[in-house]
Length: 178
Image (cartoon, rainbow, N blue to C red; front, side):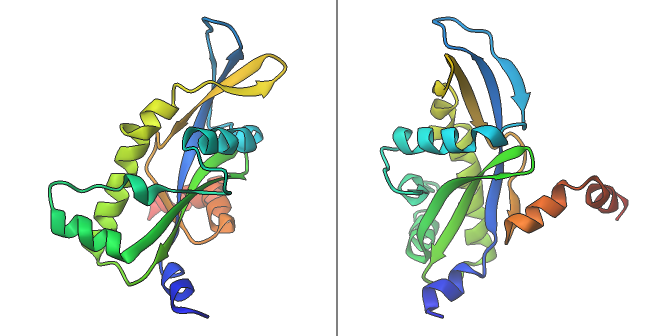
């Protein structure tokens, strides 16, 4: 196992549920909110993200958007340690998720991890994600969707199977009782 792989496995994958609204393709349309019932549109959303970011590859590197202007040293440290933050989309259960996988060169401190995830949430909600949210995504049959990232807290899991376990109502009940 090379050093890059070893470092990247130290960090969980970062999942963000994608909420969608669906409607007829018209100049003015009134969308029906499907909330997190978005799994059926995972590929459409991924294709739209690639087009939005002008990235023909299978994932988008979000490090090109990373900026922490209030602390230039922290900005530099995070950029030195995170080689890439690859964005993709997966479907787990009825929900599509934006997924970020990190490629690192060194271990992040807790503060660097916190700064990176806060910046990621900001980008999803107020940065490029806010612009993407109003992008019409065609899904065929004269219909389209709008997709919203990070409407809930980010979820940290190492595998999609762990994420699926978290969707189980029994797991959720167990967590609220602890």
